[in-house]
Length: 474
Image (cartoon, rainbow, N blue to C red):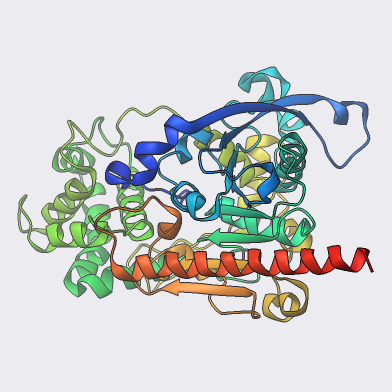
């Protein structure tokens, strides 16, 4: 079973009625920065270069003489186009701050590909070895400095924003590059979801809680279904029966094809359980009020169709591997080793996390082992409240508590300026997505609070800047 993806947006998009979606595409300028391949070594090939894409929106910018802030969005494990329209927090607040907006694409995604082509970049572990979070942060640092010089805005405060994996990068950037970024908004950033900090089963514990809170009977039906599916699969023609019942695109080879598919639906429904559709409720309502038969499999099929919609077939439909599939597979076998397991008391079949097996699988796939403890060594994570209370500042960790990845997030204030904003009904990265007319009041209030805190950071920055300038003339 694959780990649930750490990305801002789920299958059900919310941007159809948004301000950002309707306006941002008309005001973008695309640039390419001649980026260093390897920021941390001095080998001859370290100095090879590649073109890294970044995009500017200057519609509301106050200009170089205004010292207006720069809002920088850190691209995550996807081409940059995926963020325009869906990510609304920059575009929807730029006019309030007269801010320059910058979006930076993550190396090895989209058009920011080293070695001249995707085929060459993903050829083997030697070319993939430059594909990690530390290199990505150094890329962002170089591009922000370049933008400062290009637009003559060296005095402008920089606020970095990221969602999911991008939120992890934003928080780490503030800690590693405080001289470049004044503050960071890290939305749904599971920076504590690593070995020896967060239990591997924490994610599915919240998925289970979400479904149980929505409907106990729905939860119970799902929990019973795994045994029913495996029992039928073990019988003569059982896989054929399941293939027909679930309208699979191809005959099932084993029951895990079906059970993994269903588990993925439930996990995605919980992670992206956002208004107005509320996928968990949508799935549970169809399970509790079935339209495809009153037996357990009929109920489960109804829930699957409610989430996926009416399709010609399900489960093993032909799919093409995306850039994110390929890229994230490497990243989780490099430094982003997020432990994922399932305990006995969840609504899923038990699936213990085995680190040794994980390491061996990565070695088989890429020829090199992952570094499961490197992230917490390089960025920290253990005793985070004690460490960051005196060391860190100006970071917002925002989490919706219905998001399973909130189990690896920072959920309590660490200091006056390293703060946690949580919403009981919130889901993954909901606060940074484009606004819609159906947004509930608690979400509107959350976004207002984030803007208030960022405005305070900027106000304090200019107060400090003014004091420094006066001190020079004494």
